[in-house]
Length: 350
Image (cartoon, rainbow, N blue to C red; front, top):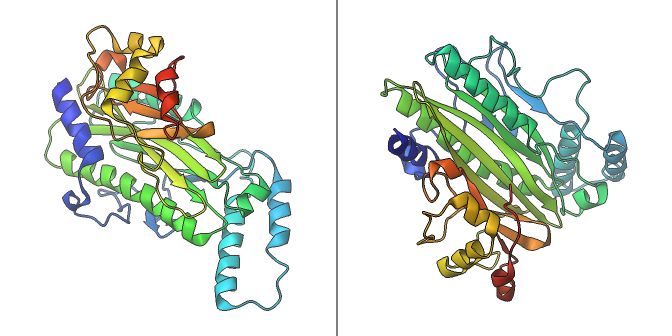
């Protein structure tokens, strides 16, 4: 069962866009009466009332930040078409950053006994998935209120959450707002393509598999500062009747000045020898991996970046690590300073 779960998860998260029948730019409408948001550009709509789609644009710093930026966008009198388009993008971003109404819920009520991820799973398995979904949205950083000056200088972006719930899928993904419409579109399109791939492949698998595949997706913001946005999208997958699920973590790192996605090479690059050295120097990581772990043969594709351009490599559950180890995060330091790699020690990173 574990092997099948691992293979299925790789299908969900890693196959090329040619596998998917739907457009990679669109999260399609779900079938059989369930509602999924239709995403076109940076606009999110629903096709029918009663949808479980929710958005959160709350700003923890209050309305002062929004007001201070708003003032800067309304002083122009005569604007060229290009300037008008840029101002419209700014105002749309500011509107998205406005505080949400009090008393509104960001997510589906995962504590409700009526909440079911899967219509075909047992009550016990649905209860377990409710617990996973509830912990996921509670334990991560999902909303970012940027500093006004950093926002206008494209050093930070705003981040809010969108949740789409349908049978076998509970997806929470980030929506980014930027003072630049181009940056905003580039980042959001990249994220939506990935979400669409996972969603489309779940539907494809479930159209033929007797034991349905269930996916709970959520994200965690690791950095939004100094022109770098780095976040993780977690997918927890479990099949009906399975005792345990498997996690897959996808890392996204962007330049918030241009909207370009950054590669591991952009951060300085690392080879398998250097990564194994960082693992050997970290007692907590070695303990988590267990004595049977003999090292990586090739560098994993996923990573994220924290303050100080410190890079963290992601070792996937059941791909690189044993199931019992879960997902393992290996700090490897500032990869632009190769001398620092051998000295990276400390606790595991989450």
